[in-house]
Length: 310
Image (cartoon, rainbow, N blue to C red):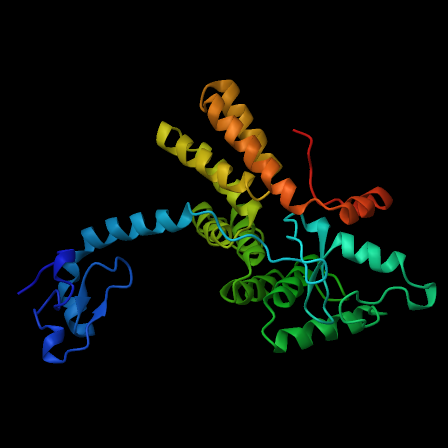
């Protein structure tokens, strides 16, 4: 007896045994439409269920993929939303906090020279050497700090902090950081597969990792997915590309806003689509703009935390 209907999830899809008989049924993790009483029943039922399962799994994946991801957390000092532009925030290896450029600048401007270069959050003096910086990252790694693990991967990738360039080690650390929820790690893995740097070039794997990064909120990963969709001709793919760009725009991706503008000029998007994108980008700016951050940028351009040049 077998049944792949979503209406019979209270019985095993292969043998028909039900939960009322005390059987512990487990749902198919790919489609969530059917349940099985054992691994043996799941394997036996696979030939019948495979096609329907793949179709539903793809549908569920796209639902998750095209959700607006949660924004970055707030700065722990000013409690304002952190900008997505990397120059607008800094990871502190001493305490593991991500602090906005405005708070870093305000703190450094208000202290004496003798106390310069200390963490605005935990007041730990800045590292005085690559070796000390490396030790701090390793200490954070022991606490499963995903950002520290990701950053160490980047140091191996670019041979920083006195480390040798090691693509394999970088990928290993990025995988670990990604599994702990670090979006940038998945983005970097995707870029490695796209360029063939340290691994065999594989666009499908690149796309897969960019999807993981995008779902965690990485705007560049989301933008790359839009570009990837554009490279495949067809209205459906252009529609998906536009969806990716619209999601990224709401998290401050200026390149995505430019692509939507270009879609509008070419007739691929409507005037309303472009207007919606502009409103989304402005809404993002309204959330992250503060006088303190503007003051930081006015003093040092490296503190730039958004780009308004459309």
